[in-house]
Length: 388
Image 1: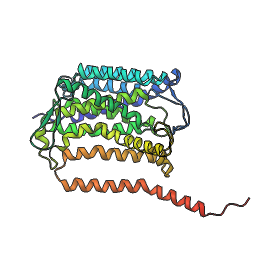
Image 2: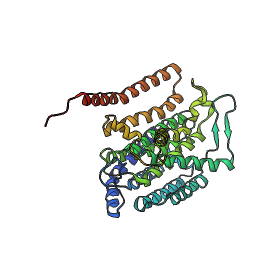
Image 3: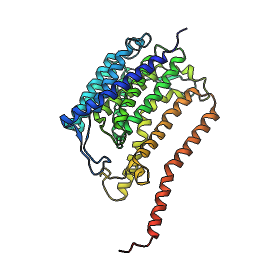
Image 4: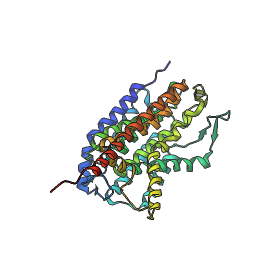
């Protein structure tokens, strides 16, 4: 009976982490020499010019990790079944190159979108990363087959949404890399569960993509966490979004509805891979909605920039930069790993109880500094003015 190659996945993640960690300072020096710098703006949190192009190191870590995986006894199956991995890696190289150009010269949005469509289109058509069917967790329908005419555009659209979602949450040091590592780890665990149910060959590709991406993001974080020495830039955010989407789509196509109907939540866990954009977009979407309401109420344009986004609010509430990022990590992990728990757990009460406890704990930790902040402001108002 074949055993699951868990140690090989761990090795791939470690290779990606180590290579990315070692090459990020090199990418930083190249970015400084090329002038690929993020200059501070009024609404930015960073106060000094910071190099971009961290995505080059992330891509190098991923590429070398996949090179090692192709030569491992079991993981070479990922290159024989499922997506055409060379085309996936080639598409990732194209979108990373597009991001490097944008990090240096700041392309206009239309040109950038065209490049994203080109790279994503190659991954979907030639790489075979396509959302062939959408699982239906209720009833006896099983799955809804999209067909070739719908599969290609739907997958491209899903990938584009995921790619651009990373740009929205890149407002604090380490936020995008950390959220990506959390999401990739969640899908690695989900795909691990798929392979454990007898789909080792089919589940190898999504697990490999997720494990490699999680390792690369973890290796990048020490250089990117507050205070950041380098940003991943568009070369990193677009690359991470593409690989994350490829892993999610592949995991959706390899999961068998008959397996997950055994859990207490039925086939609901089958929808987990489709929550990739949601788990990333949850924070920026709420932020965008609040920003539009706030600006319209004040008679301003919905697109007028300000410094009242969620991460700005957390800082104003009394959270430190580091604490604000960790709180956003917590909420992202709660969204991502809840789906993983649904695929594993057989006790409905246990899962819902644990989820409720975590939500209450998260709200308490998030709001306590706000109470302290308001209390300090009231004390300041009551305090008599100082005599000169």
